[in-house]
Length: 140
Ligand code: DAT
Ligand code: MG
Image (tube, rainbow, N blue to C red):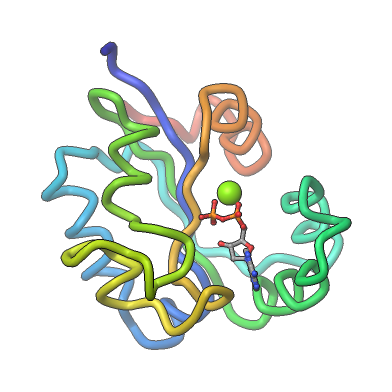
């Protein structure tokens, strides 16, 4: 597997509880390198666009309101097989199903307030990185 880049969000439940550093440490321990990082607060329109794929789901409004409720940290992670590796470090969407040691097992509050987002495929990783970062901001 080649070196890949993936997109990550440290979500409002985690920034609010001052867990940014502990979550970044999990990425770094897994061999993922932070090649871009910024703290921002999304507008509702941005959250709705970012999560557009879920617009028909019953939890869409709740998800978007949650994502704008506090600042978030958006990052690009780089490493061997980074997309799958990040999903592994994150753990299952529902923290009750997440494996021990994963970010969601250790920090998530619920299926909605689950501390992190991570891209699920190379195409979505490329789209999500481009949504938040310009090429100049990616420092490998
Ligand atoms: P993931 O974030 O693991 O990729 P997803 O893409 O299926 O999960 O869903 C995106 C986010 O939407 C997820 O992180 C939290 C929220 N979500 C998913 N299923 C939910 C549900 N049943 N109830 C409330 N929020 C949910
Ligand atoms: Mg997803």
